[in-house]
Image (cartoon, rainbow, N blue to C red):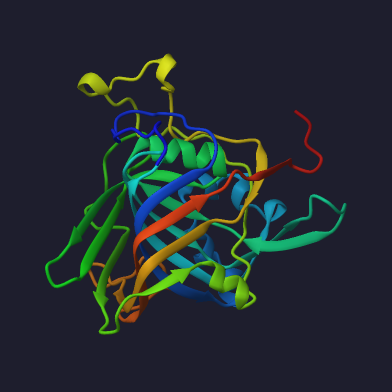
Length: 298
């Protein structure tokens, strides 16, 4: 990894430009969204954080959900330019949006509608560099002796570090009996599935509020520190193709039942679904292509 890597501190915001090249453990659940579900009010409520739902990010002017193949991922970055952190993300299929190259035309690509993390640097850089609608959350991530993993995600309430007692998302992974095999997200392209993400501009949020720095890891301007909210807003659209590769992926079973028996979304109500664990995975977020919102002038 690059010499610039630093140990994560959840209480600081450290701005990092350029691509992300990380080592991580990844859990993936494939989902399929029907066109009817994509057009429903429950889709909007379940898939967008409140900040983005109330902004142009979730408006029809910035894209119409069409459904199709998507995924939920839980990732623990052990090492990366953004530090060591956890995240959970949702890509609920394809969106149709204004084509930046042909006036009056539309294009279709997948879009990430929600993502949570447990460090302010991970939140800031994902929003600032990639237009990922990332927010802070508490993660209860446990790897068990039998090979299973349990994950619970508790998003922080706006402007604070308070959470609801019930996790917004729960997940249990149970490994299958087949041995691990190499896996790359390039296999999707071979199957005719384009995983390129096109993300609209983001609104600015309050973040989790002021958090005291810790010991010798205090940040100043010379070391890339940033004052203010980690929920930074952006002005341009971005397009990028994430890449993941692991020498060992294991097919298993996932359970997304929350402690009260409910599910985080009515269309991902799986007490038993296929899930893939990618161990020691390379995760790459390249430098995105960028363009201005059509008709907007800064």
